[in-house]
Image 1 (cartoon, protein in one colour):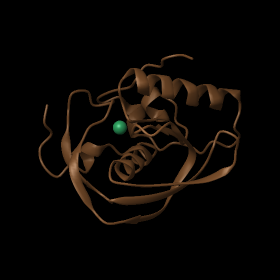
Image 2 (spheres, helix red, strand yellow):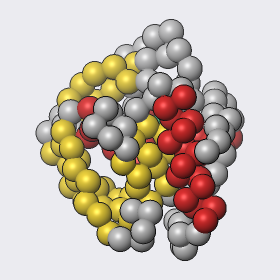
Image 3 (cartoon, rainbow, N blue to C red):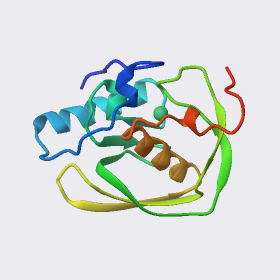
Image 4 (cartoon, helix red, strand yellow):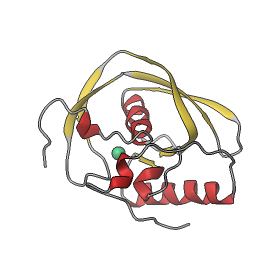
Length: 150
Ligand code: NI
């Protein structure tokens, strides 16, 4: 277990498109473990690999119902609309109102390389959409409706 440095602000790594994880290796599993440790240490509900400087499609989420690890996640379906304040560990101290789907269904691989389906409403849908955006270099401030509040 290890904490990794969270990239913040204008760090260019946050704006890159991440590559798929082609093979799940020991370093993939170490990355997922470290991402979870780093997320919990920072009191976050989600973290994507580029936020620790790794340009691979891997995400961890825990909105309070247990850890979810997603490798090569893809959105299969979204529905509805919610609006609410959102923040990001890479933009410390800021929040802004962002519209997101109220439901999201995602396909991914788990750490054993098995295909899993993860779906959620409300905060889970928001976390899924936010974290998957990170893998394409998109930050929530790009989608904010109003001003960024500090
Ligand atoms: Ni974020």
